Length: 272
Image (cartoon, rainbow, N blue to C red):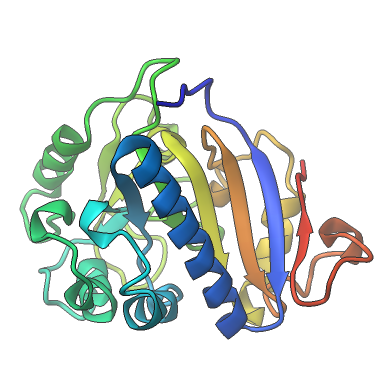
């Protein structure tokens, strides 16, 4: 079992011509990571992203990777949830179930949803924190293999919004977020920065020209990050990967991606 040295920011940026090829690359990457984790530790622990961006990826995995992914050895968690019921159209779990989980042979007991319907929301946060365990001490193995995240136009990720008190959390792994900083305007539950950092890798999946300015701001920001750009504060025990389509990367200088690289997939080992 690997040893966690401590949260790091080792960034790798990959740019694809369009969302379809981006999703295909993420699916291949996830399948390879899952097989490696199962071979090494017997289980692949994956934190799903919510919102609409990953829906096409989930449908692709359900359709084309159903027989090529170790689903029976995969354990599913969620990075955040809206405080709604599991069948509500705004539920991250509902989206993931409809797009992916209902179509692959993953045991139900290995799907751990955030219970957004519980009141008060702090009760749901405490229950999920008990499930995933306390903040790991220095040197402990990461809790998750892969954390999949998105990026909001304001720089938020999961339900960690700019300037929110949750960004100052250093001990709890899960918190209730009473005020959302982005639609839908409902309270949330979210993993915290320490929880996201307890991962072997973090993978940001971002697409669309409406995210281009935010992508550029986040990836140009200093290595320490600040509460105005929560996505920049995310760390991992391993790499922080950014998978972008060409539109999302359109505001980045070419030098930041790397000259002379294949047009289908441009990458840079580290930035910042």
